[in-house]
Image 1 (cartoon, one colour):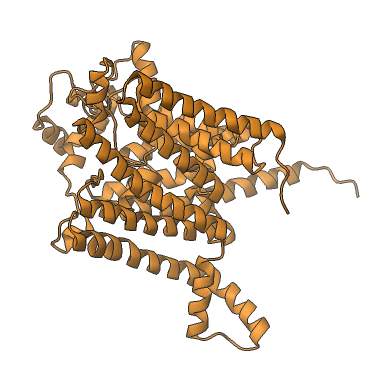
Image 2 (cartoon, rainbow, N blue to C red):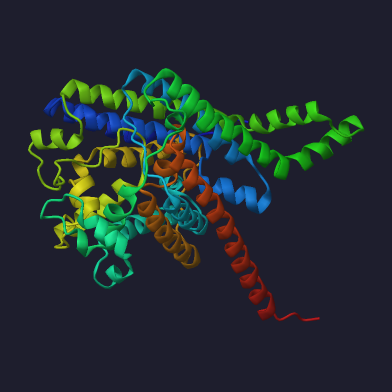
Amino acid sequence: MEIAIPQKNRIWVLVIVGFFALISIGTYAIHEYYIYLSAYLWFGFIYGMCLQYGRFCFASAFRDLFAVGVPRMVVGIMIATLLFSITSSLVASTGWSTFHAAPWSVHAIIAGLIFGIGMVFAGGCASGSLYKAGEGNGVSMLVILSISVTQSSFVDLGGWFNNLVPKSWAESALTKSMPSSIKVSDGWVDQYLAGYVWDQPVITFAKLLGLEDTSLVGAFVGNTFLGVFLPAICLLAIVYTLWSRQRFTLDFEASEGHKPGLADHVRGYWEMIVSSKRTAIAGLFLGIACGLQMFVIEGLRMKFGVKNAGTLLQRLGHDFGISAKGTVFDPGYWYVTTQEAQWVGWVAQKLGWNNMDNIYFGWVNGIPNPAINPADWMSVALIGGAAVMALSNGEFKWKAPTKELAFWALLGGAFMGIGSRLALGCNVGAFFVRTANGDVSGWSFGLGMVGGAYVGVKIFNWYTERQMAKEMANLDFDL
């Protein structure tokens, strides 16, 4: 049944698309360098449309799996990861990949655990909260705010918190070469990064085989086949066995009159994978777009003769907020949480809070004006793309948060903000992108995130049952 879309929705779709088009055309007319920012903008727009169409949310995936046994979203995430891995390996083998693997250690698992708990509390992961904000969801807007404020504050923690820094971290951090403007010994996160994380090995599945990530064999055999395809197949086999097999067996026995054999379960496994056409289609386009963005951004870097957007911004006369290395956050692929921290960091800097003396902002990412920050353009456009898809499908609706939901949104966002910074990324940057590119740390974060989601579901269920019991106890029944 076709849904009738109100005329005002169509007008808003034209307004949103026209607004982004006007920005792209207008800024390009000012200088061709702005096409670099527009590339981020339109890929963000595509991500928003894909996420909203497929209802892609890591929190929903694990909540649905652990709470009600529905594997649809987990399957969709694995499809998108596998497809992204194929496109990213293709790009890597051409030497045009912008991906950089992250240090691997137990910190990724711990960070994933914290993040997983937070995304269940908040009712949405980092990327899911963005697309839901595009649907008019007020709770998701609070989640984004909480993630942003928490990250920006957390990376500048000092004072008493420095007492919690292990001696080995402090000593190792002091051996790193830093400009005088970066006060490494004054911040907990600074010493965590320079004294611990940076000392950990960077491992990809290709390197485990003794191959280069940029070689055809290393990219496809090591990072895609060994690093993504086999783990994904095994993970989905576990999901089928624990959550889908019993349902398939009951349906099979009802229709065939006997228990299914191995071949029948293989068919059931495949049916589980293709059961949601909408999610699979979204995963297909999401995976292709993620790989294509790396190719496009690297091509633009080569065209303009730069390695980072910070150089372009300085050429355009935008010097404020550039890091001590002359860089800004410019991953070259889909990322979410860092630019959200930059929004708050930039505002705080303007209000007198010095954010340029820590590693996160002052040495690595900078805090450029959000109006000319490439990654900011991507996130804003992601919200816009989700809004366009929601309006087109008649799924846009303003939803004000209740006090209780607002509390969980702020609490969950805070957990996700801390987890993101400990892992150097969220469900997108620390799991989806890294895993698809054969980074071992991606699966480590994912393992922690799944465990955190399980814990979060248990806590949330306990809280819900407790609240329901109180309400029932307060009822006065007249018998």
